[in-house]
Image (cartoon, rainbow, N blue to C red; front, side):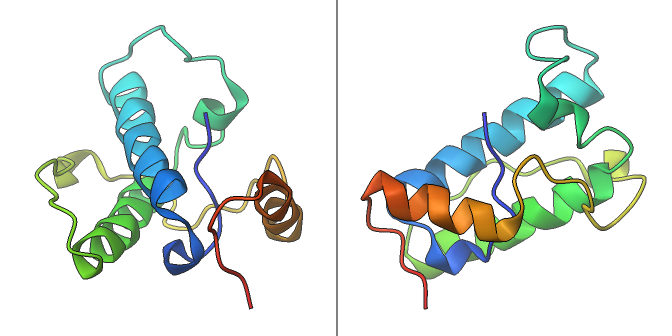
Length: 110
C-alpha cells in the first residue's frame, strides 16, 4: 500500500494507476470507518489529512487525464477535511525516488 509523495508526472503507468487505487482504498477505509488496512502505516498517515489526500487524488487524476487515461471515480469533496499538506512520511521523497529507481520500472526522474 503506497501513496507516493512525488510529482505524478514522474510515475510509470503501473505506479500511477496503482497509486490511484490506493488513494481510493485509503479514502474508503477512513471515510467509511472500514477495518481492513485501517492500522496500516500508509493509512494512518492520512488520518486527519483527508484534504491533503483529496488534493493528491486531484494531481494523480490530472496526470491520468493528461496521459489520456479514463477517470470516472471522484472523491466526495465534503469529506476533504483536515490538513491540506502531508508532512508525515514513511520514506522521504528522496528515499522514494531510490525505491522506484531500484524497481527498474519506467518511472522517470531528472
